[in-house]
Amino acid sequence: MNRIETKFETLRSKGGKALIPFLTAGDPDLGKTCEMVLAMEAAGADIIELGVPFSDPIADGPVIQRATQRALDTGTTLDRILDLVRRIRRSSEIPILLFSYYNPLLAHGLDRLADDAVEAGIDGLLASDLTVEESDAFVNTMRQRGLSTVFLVAPTSSPERVERIARASTGFLYAVSRTGVTGARNELSDDLAGFIRLLKDHTNLPVAVGFGISRPEHVQAVWKEADGAVVGSAIVGEIEKHLSSDDLAASIGRFVRWLRGDSR
Image (cartoon, rainbow, N blue to C red; front, side):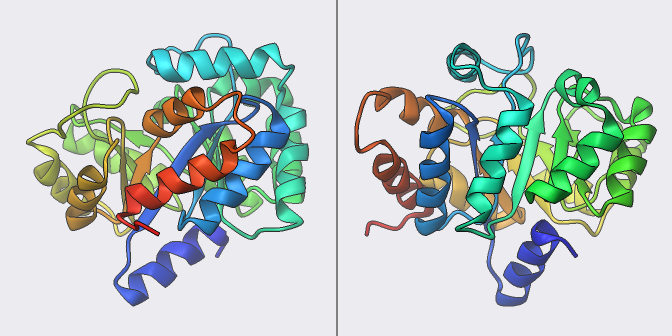
């Protein structure tokens, strides 16, 4: 098992649930990204989703769009993100999922990407705009190197498509809590519990829920039904508030502790 699978197995054996923060690599720069990853781990993060900036982030709302542009403006590339993960691995074994649009991954070359990802210390990849119907080459190449392939599944997916997405997924299944783009919301969907039950009828994989989760009560509500909660835009928005602060990593660590309900 890789680090993602091991983490979920460990949490399951203890009755625990995963907190999975997302941040855009290179926002505001790669050095600060490394500091924030380590601060989030110290604050109780279980898995890190590391976003690859892309020029056309069609699935993202304005908060992550702005972070993506800031990262691109500082020259963040996939090769530099791989170097960032190597740097993180000098200090940490936290599971890392690379969250990207497909274009940067395909441009890198799938075989080269798989080899480079393993060597750098990445544990899995999610290509947010890659449909499961066109994913065979990606899935086969990554799985041959022991990398998890995580796919998004939407509440509008038919049971047949849920089954297909579940078969293509390893590590965990990423449940999109609602339709639309990324972004913090005040309320979770009323249908979320039923959606998670549907997913669990089709897979033994852990299910993590993302899109719109922004407060401790959201995290706790998700944990009652699913195996993990993904928080993206709320964290990226907090980064944006403290961009010029010398205390950026510590501020994000405090925010992660707040999300966990830990007031320390």
